[in-house]
Amino acid sequence: MRDLHIHLGGAVPSSVLWEILCDNGLQTEFKHFDEFHSSLTADPHDIRSLDDFLGRYFGLTERIQSSPAAASMSAYQLVAKAYRRARIEGVELRYNPVKRVREGLHTLEAIILATLQGLERASMHYKVNTGVILSLGRDISLEANWTITEAAIAWRSRGSLHGAFGVVGLDMAGPESGRKEFLEPWLNEIAAMYQKARQAGLGTTYHIGETDLTGPDGIERVLDRVQPDRIGHGIQLRTAEGAQLDRLLGILKERRILLELCPTVNMVTHSIESLDELVDLVIMLDEQDIPFCLNTDAPYLLHTNLQKEYDIMAEKLGSRAALLDQCHEHAKAYSFMKTGWKTPTKGTPLHPFQSNL
Ligand SMILES: [Zn+2]
Image (cartoon, rainbow, N blue to C red; front, top):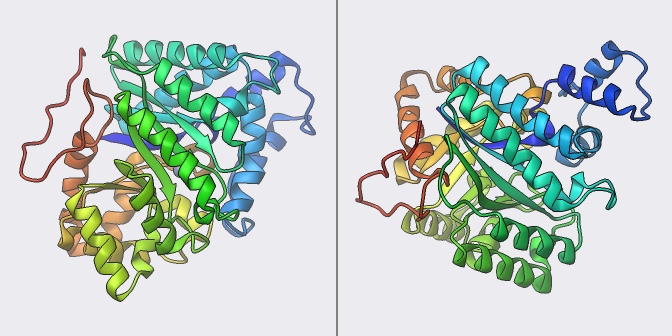
């Protein structure tokens, strides 16, 4: 199994974060580990929305991970835990490096190098393929987003070293409430960043249509303007109707764009109220021959792992659970962890999984 959508800010065990916090002598309101641990459990009864989830949990974990040593240890432990829990074969880890420089105390280069070194160790120790997707942010300036884009290009993968591929892709993440995708100049600028990244050989993905704040209209705008290879979530596709639904299905199918689905986080953030909504979506994707796979997003905060995500969806799908089998092939085919990434075209055999392991 391969996890193509997992955030550094939500995937590192609290015990590891606590050790980093104590070793660095960071000032927080937490005096005891138990207090800290329970604060890092996302409770769906307590969380109101995606914005609430991102603001409440990611701010703290990002602050703790904000040093080269902390970033390296976090990246390593994320892979180690994912392997121990679900025997994963590949992880594409995503994070926003600008949010980990502690207001300029550290350089971006030092943070990126540290995560890559942590992942090289993890790839060697656990025989797992690893890659980094640098996330742009809807909640940071365009200037900072250009800095991340240039860094992704400068650090882009030139192949694998012991299964570690380095920086393989670019993402957009952050709260959907700002509805940035509906601001013309902003989206044009982001599209230019994606174009530059694509020309440099990076894979591209984009969080959109996770909530009704961006909805099918947001998905359509991103598909038209940014043209990513994959979509993070995109679950609002299920609410599209009539001509717009036909248009969206047509684009996704024709361009072979993969949807990265992450069931548990959508439940916890109330982006969906029942997994049945995702069941209807995956049945539609399967019928329309649109690629998708399952992922964890923030496994530590959500107390999940990749096997669990497949199990809960298989249970919900019942007699149709076999349609999830294709997810593993899709996750392999659409992984950016290969030399010379290209969107798989319809009818061509799936790319062989390239690895030095
Ligand atoms: Zn995500």
